[in-house]
Length: 425
Ligand code: ADP
Image (cartoon, rainbow, N blue to C red; front, top):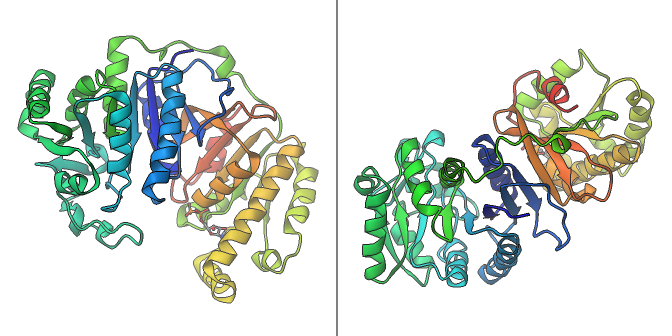
């Protein structure tokens, strides 16, 4: 099995976003959790996105992990490796974008690496190398106050120069709008000047297509889901992907009991739970019992197992803001959050042991805890339930195949749980 596009994402949600973008653009895509084992049996796919948690760790460690991922991807035939970063270029002068880019560039023998976090449909544009978040430059956006990596400079040529061993250049918008040939000519110029990486401007969706057309013939690129979209378009255009090939085995129903877990306390999730109460049994966990060390997971599982044969169930820790604030005031935000996440993970594990094969999880951190506990190595990305929330099919798991939906708090319409169960057969 040969993959066309390998991606290394520096965080989990960024990886999911990219995997979903590639799928929508027509690539059959698997997202792995960490660097996969050598023997991971992949279905027939075009792209693999390896999710790392390397955005804010020490640069040498980020480089080592990224290189492991790169070796795995190249070993499966990936000609091009995209290093997926945040669309707000989250990093510090110590890295990790520059150091990882330098390592991948060395390994691939790349002349000039194309770099752009632009994704115009989500308001990220780059002009004269300056990144804009909506209407404002990066350094005037909320990212200026980010707790881990405050972004005080919108000029990405400068930002990347501080992180990288390479000399950094610019491919400006005036060149991009003249099309792929003009970009290639500019890159040849830059290479002649000893430049090793270039920030490339993009203000409109069509610019991503031009960038993808050029980048796909390189070995390495760096950027957010926007350049991923450009690369996917170029691969689809080249006709070498399996996009249209219906793969019956991968669309086969999974069946078995279904359950939903909610750990998000967002407005959207609270409204979705209220809707779900009308159509399925719902159990509300008591956070005070969890924090007192009582076995809420066991109580929830006993309740769920009674109902599961007949109906999908929903188990929710979610509460209104004033109740959440009260719990946090008594126990501390982190202690409360962690304890509740772990209880949700334990419930998920018990549900799977009881035969659940279709699981919907609301909440970003909650989803992370559940996926870790279930030790799922990878997912094949399926159709979207709501924008940004695809159906995921487990790949290479020790237990039977499952379908999951992992939703960040604010995503999805009011019927989200019903919509998810409708698509997860
Ligand atoms: P979102 O995607 O909405 O941010 P997360 O799962 O990432 O959702 O975060 C929600 C956090 O709130 C988790 O740490 C979860 O354990 C915690 N939580 C859930 N229910 C409660 C509650 N009733 N009181 C306090 N914290 C809660």
